[in-house]
Image 1: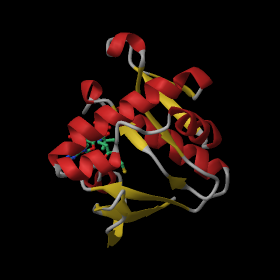
Image 2: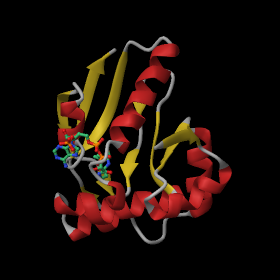
Image 3: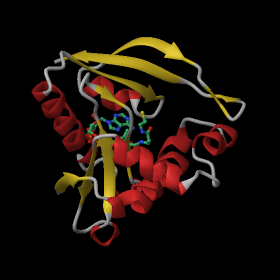
Image 4: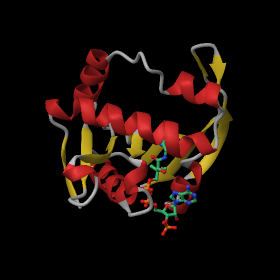
Length: 157
Ligand SMILES: CC(C)(COP(=O)(O)OP(=O)(O)OC[C@H]1O[C@@H](n2cnc3c(N)ncnc32)[C@H](O)[C@@H]1OP(=O)(O)O)[C@@H](O)C(=O)NCCC(=O)NCCS
């Protein structure tokens, strides 16, 4: 597995990973209406590219998955907030998210952060719990008029 910094040409592939992760993996835990609100067809690719480039984004590549295209990605800010962590269903349970989270941890530590924080989906909650995060609150954000469920989770560094 190779981890590397996000490049402008990763915009399309990271958006595709996001959509597949939500529509296939997270679809186990969310209704079709919730999935459609979370990962809609009409997401603006330009806004996506700008957001990914602005965030400190790291991508993972596996030579034998998706012909070596992006298999997962994450980001972390200087305070230790992890906004996105998505792994393609074709690369599930092979340690991609674990490797990306280890990068986020090391990066946040180097910035002087004292904790990692995230808003974990129902699907990702067991992953974060397995990595030492604890739930602080259940949340119900509304996207496109549809109520979702996620968890505010935190782990000291
Ligand atoms: C959550 C997610 C990022 C995990 O990615 P992954 O690369 O498959 O995770 P890893 O292989 O690194 O998992 C490592 C460990 O985490 C735990 N884990 C991961 N997914 C799990 C699940 N669905 N249920 C229970 N434990 C899980 C396990 O302990 C696993 O170890 P194991 O495979 O030896 O049992 C991925 O499933 C995903 O993209 N989900 C859909 C999108 C999403 O919800 N993203 C998060 C938004 S906050």
